[in-house]
Length: 612
View 1 (tube, one colour):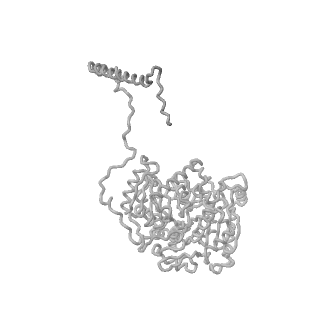
View 2: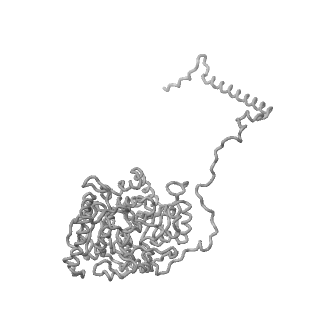
View 3: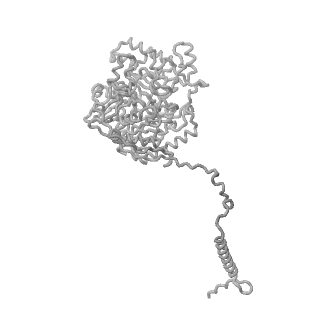
């Protein structure tokens, strides 16, 4: 049987406890209504404000100090100007004979210096005057095709992309390159390794530790078609291949078409465009450099760019002269004297000869100059350089002195500090970053920022990480953050540091295990047309705004970029607007985007290219 609910509790006398609050609410409502009626009548019988001083104290309103509000814009975009037809029409294409034009290594201009200077000066950079600067677009050769992707490009290239058959005939017996139908085949041969570069590198690896990560950056002088540098990539070694534009006119172009780093250059009168202590190893395979001429000046330059403890590898004359002198068409006495002079220069540089076996000889630079400084006082031959900046290398003449290493306390200490093995060194705070004023905390934050930036780039350029882009240039590399963010992908980056930036970071970039060069972007770069897949320009146009015409920089970017390539430009919004007007006249499509700093920040990003 269900029990009925108990009755609600009541006060004594049976009165409901909810009745009293209800009565109070009714009385409060009546009072509020009467107050409203009374106030309305009082207001109607008097004026609202009789004395200004009695209300809100606004008598001295005109004397109040009201803060000035800023309504001016922070970003200035000029109104569209009436442009002449010349300012809106497309730029013309250059004549077909400019297809492989290298402005600063033009053979016609070089011939003007061939009789007026010695020491290969005519093979160095000789850029056109402003009056000679082209204002046209370099055309692609007929039948041009998209290059093979890496790693297939290491072995194959389309002949129409680099239509130079001379090397296929001139170096046929040495297996540099072969023509097979519409393709060029690179079998891996060379002047000193006719049977193949693999066995040659294996021989070097028995002398120099190539596999353990200590060797990361290599300089290859007289690189040919860069088969040596191409094969070193199997060891995670990055090689800067250097060769002039000479009778082997397209060797650097072949190298870049293969996806291997290379620039036009020569050991002539001026320093190589690299800072001191840059390379873990330097290599010459019958590179035709007269090492013993000019009292060993070229070896002094190699010593400058070698890192403490770095290696110099030489194959070709005069090494192994007892066996090879007949093939070189030289006498035994001549070659023996050359080797003796070479050994003497190496000794005066305080280099230690590691080994000579077969066609290969290897020397090692000292880790510090404690012993060397004592020996030089005894020999009284070479002196240490005392005045010049060892990192100054843009149109700076070579000097007949030894570049001094930083002082150390112990005989076994490495000058400048010991570097981590690759790949750890890419993200470790470089010793030379201290020279730029950067702290460890700022360095790691800098790396994080660039990882975020590159991730954002990948959203717009969706093929950035898929292998479409191989050869990449950073026109204003800073501390190498862009290259570091891309290091896990199958790309390489030419890190360019403007020589007049005021903050020389290229040495720190090399310490991180990357490569690069100095540059003045008012001049053309030392490369062939169509050699880069992607070009990154971080505030480069603002940097050069008052130094030269930004249109000339864009023409140079057009010359270097492959037809299917892309450009990423970060700069102030005002500069971006100017740039976009010019790129439209170059028949380039573009996309404008905010940076990671948001829509209110003046920095914007322009993605340029017809295949984004």
